[in-house]
Image (cartoon, rainbow, N blue to C red; front, side, top):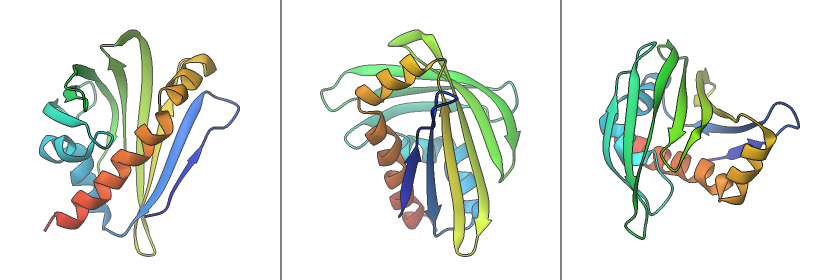
Length: 156
């Protein structure tokens, strides 16, 4: 899988783009179903203990994760926009940084072979984006997408 990441000067956003050799319907299911999110939505070495999601405008989500050292933490937020098999946007808050609200937008479209997937992380300021990058943000963007592709291959 080819993944590209952009960090334009304005706004404070990181955008990861990947071409997945799977139909949009399968990618949509993997991005919106808790069972699948639990399997792939984490960097390598991290495990998701639980995922609760109500993928509808105004619906809430919560994910409990464990890092390789055994530390537990949660992420949570609410869904803003949901367009089936096209896009979903939601807020993301980490219990480690509860005052930092990040917005995630996932867009997908059919491509010549498979699906073009674009994941944008909009940070409150460039300071927050830089801090995320300094904490391994590039890997935190790329690795879940790699896990997504692996999981998509195993889906029947």
